[in-house]
Length: 358
Image (cartoon, rainbow, N blue to C red; front, side, top):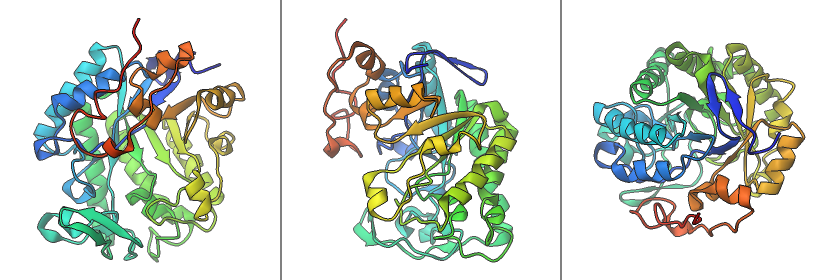
């Protein structure tokens, strides 16, 4: 098994095991709806076995960054439908990554200047870019027990919209310190009710959100993304192996089609994150494993050959190399990414990376 081996992911026959990781690019149009610019960007990368879309907020409450697309209005659904139609015409497959940032937001992004919400009233240390410049993260408001079903329903409604928009499946964004992660990890979750305390309670929100997606899509078209080593957004956990091991087992019992594991970066390890690789979950989760985190071609092939993962997701390499599978297969030189164009802007650094000729 290598990157170029065809892959049966649930009901989907995929051409290869190269996944385009979700990449926030902050280029949504009016009303946070995708535009023809976004469709061209994704179509350029349709040779991936599977594309996972950029993180897409499930409601206005889930917004935490400028220019990120949503999945809660008719215009957004129509914009995404144009994207998925174009990808399918090019022979590609795409899952929608559904997202609620929770406390990783600011009053500037919330309707009527409301406080962001989280599992607990614990602020992120540091600052967030806002239309008024860099501002300290506010202390979020802890969701009341009777509010949580409504937030779960935001995921359910977004899943319905993703179905109407023509996606091939959905992925719950439970990584990188966003709302499901804020419930799961004890570095943030200070609750004493049914959603706090032991891991069985802390995992409840994540599992209920996943179940809401399954109700709409069926488990064989639902994936889950986690970051057990991650420290981004000021995240930590006292026992990540136990916490994420429990979650992985429960996600497996729900039957989700894949577990998408963001592995440790040097920054995570420097800030106290524990190295929990994708392979840790092999005995715990019996669906497909997708590993993500700075993989090179050589390292990816080694991981697949060893059975440590079933597919490898590439982020920055796909951003800068629209034809990444072709370049990998030919052993061709890779384009150099331009970080100054990663977030926001127009075609520069978005649509103008060169592709191989012939």
